Image (cartoon, rainbow, N blue to C red; front, side, top):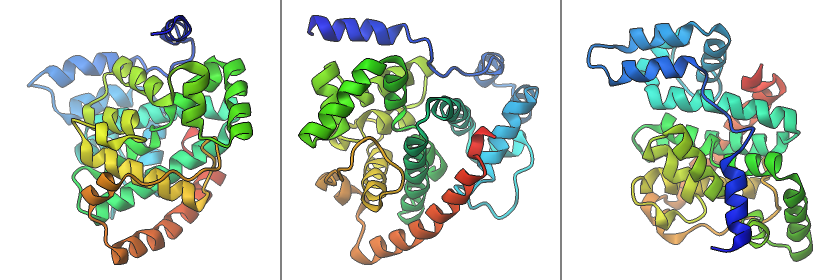
Length: 284
């Protein structure tokens, strides 16, 4: 490892602005490990933070989840979505706040588009835990946010290299930093103790063939990212549309007719996402 990369990693290890889980989750963790605790016990602790609970319920009842009835409390959310998804939602609200204050609204728009599209794909191919796949897609570019906030000078150089060489942000990050946003995303996943079904798509959405623990969710997020970039919903840092990994595409087994259905549903969902964004989304 180069001296420069070691220096960068030390800087990233002492991040000042890494989104953190609210204190209530420190109280929840022992409950999760207890065989005597149920969803209601965990929900009671989370519900003690009213602002946090409101944000979670706002997203659960948003355009991304097509539940037949409105989810009105945290207990119901936990039973339907599971703790890991709720945890991801909490992190997403923290990320949104960072993006909102940092002026990265187009990156957030891209992430929301990926979340909606990943959920569509997961549903169409009957993948397990589609809500969890959506959360992975929502968080897939969190490393970009951290790099831009913590390394502003380097971020400016990355933008210049992207423009001058017409290469991807991923490639420019490697050239300037010696690592990329997926590396940072993986560090954050370890910091937050996220499960493999979230960690692998965040870490390997550009190279889905490297996913050992969650190849299907990773393939879904990879394809969703490409489709959203192709449509031009939001802006992920460069204007390039990456090529879909053949193995990932084969893993999903999406026929031409199914792809047409996915794109048609995307049109509706992304229109809904536009309205969600105009209402200030989960940061409200």
